[in-house]
Length: 287
Image 1: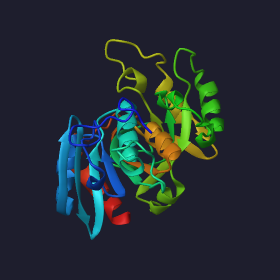
Image 2: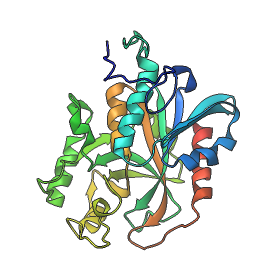
Image 3: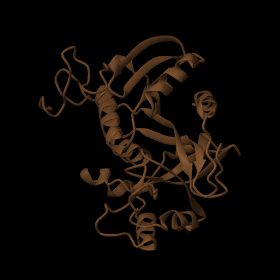
Image 4: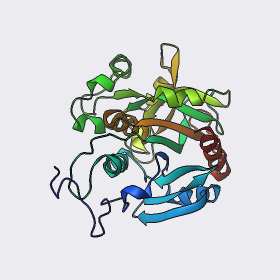
């Protein structure tokens, strides 16, 4: 049984931040960062039966080729993913009226369709990256218990040693994507590899405006890192929490990002909306 300050609902009985009821979501959910992308992608669905929003969380649920799908925005960052995944899980696995756990757990399929920055010259702007493993520089998963079993500690330990990771930062953690979902996206149009989930856009991704990042060579080091034949492909800001929380809660999760800028070549795609729409269409047709 959950207390009212643990499981918070609104006056209408909806979950606190998402403003959704259990019947509002499908078992297959596309996660985007920008609420505007929900509006951009919603024309891909027909017979939309749910349109709701609160703060940065905008939701539509409808049909794509006779399969019901929910498209929801998360906003930016692993802190928002913490809210999103916990509340989506509560919608399907907790009785919101009583706070009791449901007897038969429901597993959601969660696919993040996002944007990212390429870290290698062979991950050009315009490419699609499937995140096989997300490495979190954010520290969010450390706030939960009993997560060791989902981690790739060999990867995180070797990477931390390689980067001479300072004690002042949260220790990196590495979580693999759901293998079943990863296997669905095996065509040559997708690049597969490791993704870094950063807790910010500027210093945490090695950018310098007026303040130096902690390591001016961090991006070069990341680009040159290899382990077990896998390389670090890109930066983004959500996948480590998505993978970690989904694994702990029994959901299937995968991130596929369009690379809109390359940190090595300096190439940047200003109008990347067609790229995102193309990626989302491919994902919807595949799942």
